[in-house]
Figure 1 (cartoon, rainbow, N blue to C red):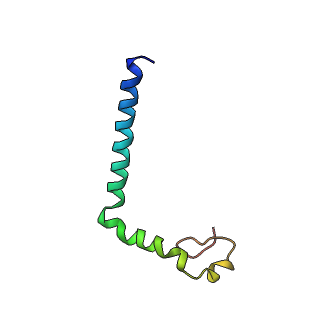
Figure 2: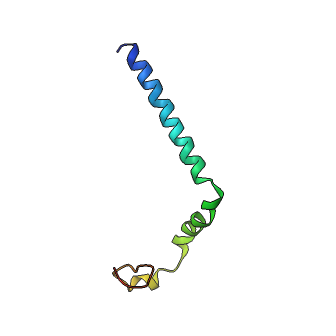
Figure 3: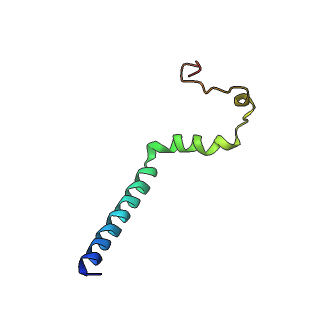
Length: 64
């Protein structure tokens, strides 16, 4: 393993760290709060209304 491998792995680590920080920053933007709150409450909602539908509905209420 030559010195090129060390530089390549260093650049890869920096890129992965930048991607992680970018995704973390994106997730904590204020305009995502409402959507993430709705998704967090999804497991607690009653699923009996959805159990009867085998085909998911579109925004217009029609089956796909």
